Image (cartoon, rainbow, N blue to C red; front, side):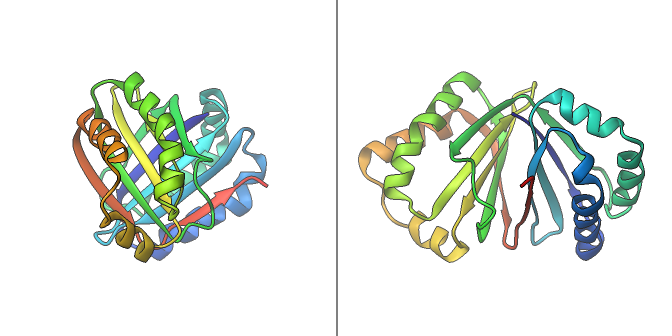
Amino acid sequence: MFMQIIQGRVRDTEAAKAALDRWQTDLAPGAEGWLGGTYGVTDDRMMVAAVRFESREAAQRNSDRPEQSSWWAEMERCFDGEVTFHDCDDVTLLLDGGSDKAGFVQVIQGRVTDRDKVRSMVEQSSKMISQYRPDVLGGTLAVDKDGFFTETIAFTSEDEARKNEAKELPPEAQKMFEEEMSLMQDVKYLDLHQPWFSSRH
């Protein structure tokens, strides 16, 4: 799997969402290799789009389409300032990768100091998460060539997420969580209170 993370501050959340909805309606059917996306806007108007493709080549073919260029010209006007792109060939799924039924998504970003170890720990943690955090529906960890990572965690609801994160984890789970966090630097959290999703059916 290949993921592209697109983010920037938006002027008008509704206009940006309408443009993304139009992509789903008009352009998605012809986007070969497109799998889906997770989207949302933080309280301070930072939009995050985590878009999944079968491969980097499929994503590039989509970018090369004339209709994609026309749509992006429209979408770009929704942003207020710089838009950043992170192309990630290194993608790891947590549980089944998430769910389009999630009521809350937390995006965690930063830099990894050891991508192989982080990937291994994410894979190992799936069993513990399913046991101790029933509010977690899954997630994705995407790392670009420079070690910048974007992790999306899908929750049943924000209320459930806040309630369960306040609980004390068993020692073995706490140790794994702390070890994973020790491999990440410059970590920041972006809360998508009203996420929306798209996927190829």
